[in-house]
Length: 187
Ligand SMILES: Nc1nc2c(ncn2[C@@H]2O[C@H](COP(=O)(O)OP(=O)(O)O)[C@@H](O)[C@H]2O)c(=O)[nH]1
Ligand SMILES: [Mg+2]
Image (tube, rainbow, N blue to C red; front, side, top):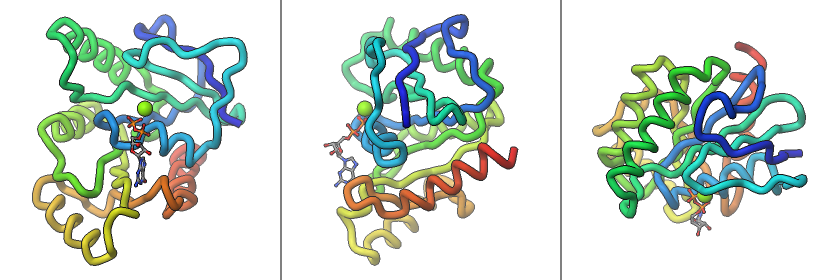
């Protein structure tokens, strides 16, 4: 079962945990749908999440915590909100040493933009292990998927460090869960 723990902005409010998986991606890429496909319906016991601009933490079967980072590249943010978001991310990724894997969700139909590239550079800079997850592949044929992967690989180095999934028909969701488990239990 996946249970909501708390929303936090600063590190003194992060929940105590030994291992964590974090999900990032642009707004509308399917982050909530993917967390739901992997872990099932989130249980809210007492507490309800704060604003979508905060880090949301969940407990999965008392095995590890899941962190849902607000969607980046959201156009309607003010300058002040962009700075605050950056500070929150910086504090999180520079201090949360228990992160075992960062799931970077992308839409298979879109070429990664500046925000996605910045995110990847940032993860490399902080030495955070990450996996690229191309979502919404139900929208494309196998041929189209291969073509997109080829195009995307001219913009970002894929190095076989990716998986294509669909939250609509659950394609490769179990395979993704296996990869997560490997990172959690073998590191
Ligand atoms: N066709 C298709 N639609 C999806 C998939 N995953 C998410 N969506 C849709 O994309 C929209 C955004 O999804 P959501 O999970 O709210 O994205 P978030 O903003 O990243 O949390 C919703 O309308 C979802 O139903 C998928 O694998 N296939
Ligand atoms: Mg969401």
